[in-house]
Image (tube, rainbow, N blue to C red; front, side, top):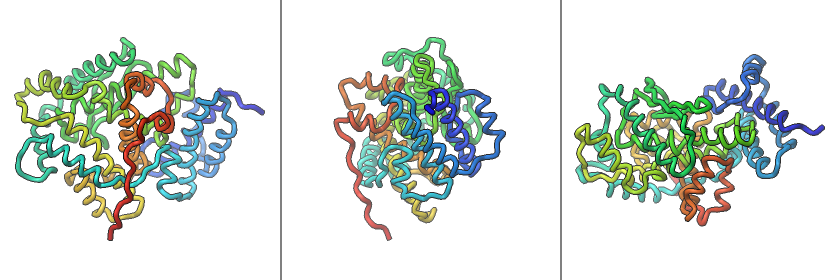
Length: 418
């Protein structure tokens, strides 16, 4: 019997809900953004959790019964294959990390050559004020200089609001945004993230800021563009409009995060500031609208170059995920992150906790590999059109790889360690 689109989407949603419940039950964070019928979620929460083996069988059935046109079927098949891989792991399968990541994320996750981090360190060295001390110490001094005092964290929603207005205006020059959209900001205590953009559905969204961590005002636009516009919130709002509202693509109710689509989402987030503030425009806006009123005078640093270099250092996090998968000692992984990602002791502890959480050891690959993939793909004369596609279409990493003039610098195999 031929399955209908409505029946397929229902079973797709149920698989995602059941799988997310199993992942969360194993100690991981939720890996699902769900906007579908409440009764489907309630039904899954009320049932006895099915064995992981049944979930892999359910995924196989969905792959066999895709009732969609070719492009949409290819996109949805990639999402289902990702869920099938996670279900298989819950059932006890332990494929090599590269195979598992390819099934979930749709990208190869080879070891990133340390030469790339050395080049990023050189860019940081040139971008930071000249002073004594190590590169990591100079980076922390730069962060401290631009830090919002903890006593003034209550001002952060208003500062974020200013940044939201500016980033929305600039994003609106690339793609039409709904005029009635509302984005507010909440500072929350001791969250496991620095910031997060959450779309509530419709036209309302919130940027959450971790009040338990210092906030660097030099990163204000970098964070707001990533979480808001043209990053995660813009993508969520616009895809709801273009896919769900305009085309009736109810599969968009279901967004499983350990999947190829989120590699592109995180890559977009890391490029978001530079897309709407080319060159030194972000630094100039911050100087005029935030830093000057706080009496923070220019120190000769290059904010855009600092952010570009720190984006490149997400590759060190990806390598740390490889080390975790190998079972390397925590002290070795911490030392690796301190050396190459330039994290301090507190940051290293938070990174280890994040990478070690179920699901996150895989998700972290999306930052570096998404950033590198988009770096190549966006290097095009039709860049604005490509940004609009990222925000409004269902794309896969394979789509971008096929269109890229270059696929990035191949990673070299790492040297053997003792």
